[in-house]
Length: 214
Image 1 (cartoon, rainbow, N blue to C red):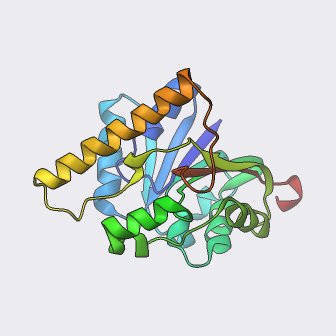
Image 2: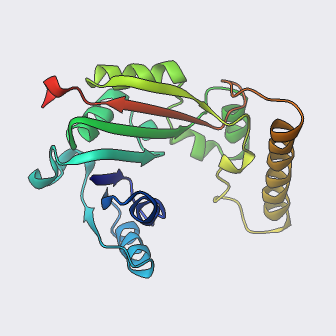
């Protein structure tokens, strides 16, 4: 089976899926530096794979309708027309192929916090709820198998790359890690904390390309 990652810049997921699930892997990204790093990681891990430095909306014809599984981590929320981005990705799937889409959840409290930490990072995203992400997949012609918030909290989702690497930066990073792991410990060992719109850091959506869209 073949798997492609959209937005594969310096990806650690491609060797993971190749080694643990036996996929033949490929990736696309428009960053030449990111693609070079993805190739380096594959080579370092001893995994064969194809990396294409192309725009999502102008992929080579040999990639159309080729893949059993498509994955993306933090891609579709950067497009104003979410359904158009999902539709462009769906073209790469075989009929009955699955698309696994992961995005940060910036619709609740965490979105407001990211805005406070770095407004430029927040502004580079289109905040999507679980419902709007699922709707975009349906509009793109996919059938939804699941779409839900993931984890009760994870403050490590926040992007602080615009901050100077001084004491405040490292204190904030380590505080985020400590708080997140404390909540996970409570969730694992004391009381179950449900994933939710307000504090969950991610949304995962799994869609299937119907055979009628071959």
